[in-house]
Every structure is written in structure tokens, then in C-alpha cells.
Image (cartoon, rainbow, N blue to C red; front, side):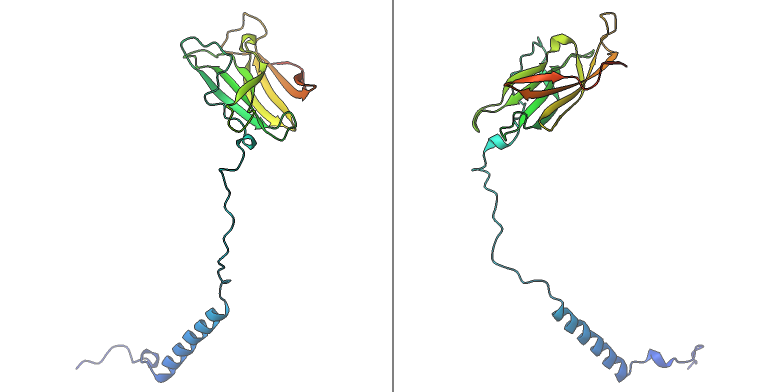
Length: 192
């Protein structure tokens, strides 16, 4: 028999003290886990939201499928931007939709329309036109803040400017006052 090249190490053999140390460690973990228990489960359930009884008027009107006062010929009108908020103070949000004809080329002018819904079963309807597409304006940004509609508008300084490249930038603000939307311009028109 050949002798091992490495001398025997005393800690490689299990002795009763090793088993005792392992049993003590396991007992400690079990005891600690019994103290640190999660809170007990309760039989009470959180109330579920009843979507059948929630009035649809609290959700802003969806512009999908709305018949906008926009003549597009053979192409469809598309909603390119939208913003929502309570514009008239009745605690029911309105939707402001930026819509243009889905033209295959060029930069079609935008129309900006305010949509509301009379009752929860009524379809959304256009109640105001803030920007008429006949004005040849493109809306670069739209938002509703503090009951007002804010928009960044792009337009043309003359008929000689190509319709692809608006050269005038303007900001506008509309607020509901005395039964109508009143426009104010926070900043003057600037050339781009």
C-alpha cells in the first residue's frame, strides 16, 4: 500500500462535535424563522372597482370614429395629436383633437377641435373649432393645462413659401369664458 503524499488533516474526519455544531446552527435558523413570520393573511378582500357603474363621462371622449368637419375627398381624416382636461369647469374632461387629411405627400393643414360627451351613452361630438384647416396652420404641440388649451402653431408668412416648410411659429391659448372659447396669444409670432 502506498502512503499518501499529503499528511492526514484532522478536520477532514467528522467527529461528534461537528454534528453537534451543525444541529445547533439548523435549530437556530428554525427558531429565528419562527420569530420572523410574515403578517397573517386575512379573509377580507379589497373592494373591486365596479366598471359597470362608473360613469363614462369621467373618461375623456375618444376621438376615434368622430365625424370631424373636415373635407378630405378620397382620403380619411386622421387624429395626429390629442390632449384632455376639464375646459369648462363642469368636472367632466373634454378632448382636444388635432386632425388633418391623410394626404400621401406634403404637409396637410391641421384642424383643432374640442370634443365633449353629453351623457355616458352619448357618442363624443365636436363642440368647437379652435383652428380651421382653411387657415393653413400646422400644430406642432398641443396641451391642456389649468383649464386652457395651449398650442404651438406653424404657418406661412406668404403664399410664396412652399407648403412643406412653414416659416412662422406662434403660440396660442384658448380658455372657456362666457360660453365660448376665447383665444389669446401668450407670445408674438416669430419667424422660424
